[in-house]
Length: 263
Image (cartoon, rainbow, N blue to C red):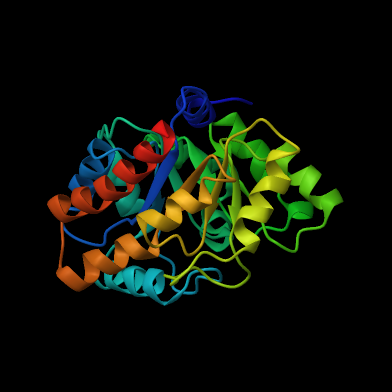
């Protein structure tokens, strides 16, 4: 299945653009949907929307803090999806969630809820590849592209399976462990992205620790683009920021990536 997410990212990449996918925790602030629009206007090619969860296995301290804030404000997966109904950010939206939330609602029902909210992709990182086929099928039936992750320790045979089954893009992670801001890009990140790109023409994005525009440019020496999560959330939390601050943050990444593409 080649859906809206993959088509959009492919078209941008094939036009010479470095892809930029910021992450926003749903329900983080009262104006969080305005933050989505601002981030899109500032140059995002797609946006990850995090559905807050009380026990996030792969999220580092910043994303966990953002989830706690959203949950404290009364956010739930369904309230976030309700908020998204009618929101036209102008770019594809990808839900980031955990399988507990999927199973609680039922795979087919949850995929339908995502689609009804205008979401076209989903990342569910805690489903093992061997157990994800039923979710992938339910998601595809509702037009939801399942994005799969590749780690630096993923062996070659498993990597081949992941890139074949991933839809929307292939999400390569820069290091083992959880998400979070880093002072430098881990060397394993670009190496993992190169391994994935050698096996597929699907867009390959690198995430986990992309914290500065300079790191994003470095990542794109190997990957087609980057996912930026913790650094954006840290700024929003620390400054009590909203749409204007989010747009300025993303614009700095967009400008650096565009300048690199012109070289």
